[in-house]
Length: 225
Ligand SMILES: *Cc1c(COP(=O)(O)O)cnc(C)c1O
Image 1 (cartoon, rainbow, N blue to C red):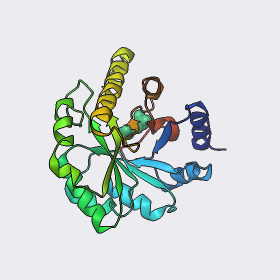
Image 2 (cartoon, protein in one colour):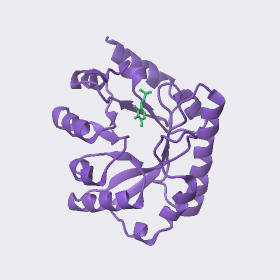
Image 3 (tube, helix red, strand yellow):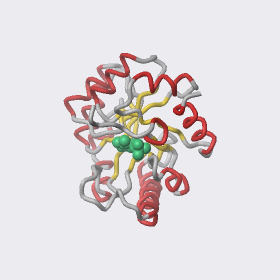
Image 4 (tube, rainbow, N blue to C red):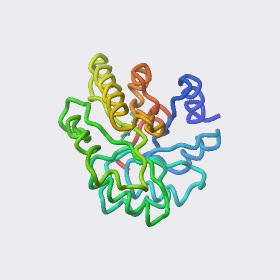
């Protein structure tokens, strides 16, 4: 068995029930994905639209593709025919475009709202105080071809486990309050996508339902190629 299959098995055995593993395959070739696929894994995440489309076209059609990276409105149409979930929705404008493209494809597309929990400036995401503005907007109610499945967040890139834990805890708190206020009778709003290779254990302790693990499965990424 290759190291990718080993890593997948070990990870899956260690994850609590109810936690979904998104194998982040960005920069990795189709053969690497096939190694994970051949040991039964079907859920993969990519952060670039072109790469996602290429891999969708190349690989088996029963793969569930998740977009986890920044999405430009003009690229939504490229993934709308097949994408399973978009983790990185950051604006009402983007939601409206996803909805329109979903309509054209006669699909319902699952979306997570990416919330800014990291203290550093570089991270994407909707600031907490703008989240409610978005959710209470009237136009949002008329978007019938998207489903808000939950929230996504990325912790600050730091050595401080305390800070990471604090940020994940904050996302869980925001999730609970948003659920109570806007999705009370909606079982679909149920996912908290948080945790990567270095911090997924903390994320799960703080209530993650979806972890996005790349390096921990496929090894280090080589961006020089
Ligand atoms: C690359 C990436 C991951 C996975 O990161 P690893 O540290 O390799 O596990 C998770 N989430 C997002 C949004 C990413 O871009």
